[in-house]
Length: 120
Ligand code: FES
Image (cartoon, rainbow, N blue to C red; front, side, top):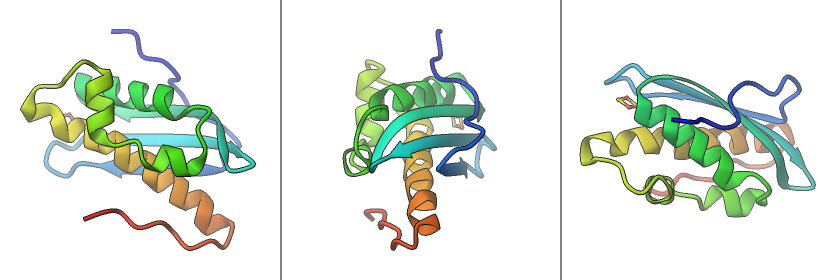
């Protein structure tokens, strides 16, 4: 009901845009990174309430974390921090995890580092 960190970072160091083809929802995560640590993070989400809540929560969870720590934040962590999501809405929290991963890898690729791999 009270999303945090909405918007876009104009000079973002990493941007991740992800979507779910089934429901058509899209999410964009922008990261500001200093010394391998996330110093600022914002989201823009066009989607359902659970997707907006998940994006807001993931920004709160990764802010201040190192990239390695942020990579480990799972969609389950996001859903738990929201005190649960209905089973049909779990895929919405997955967008948040994927958006952060994509933004981190965008930063890594821009710095000639190999992208980290998604676990299967
Ligand atoms: Fe698609 Fe929630 S219904 S992200």
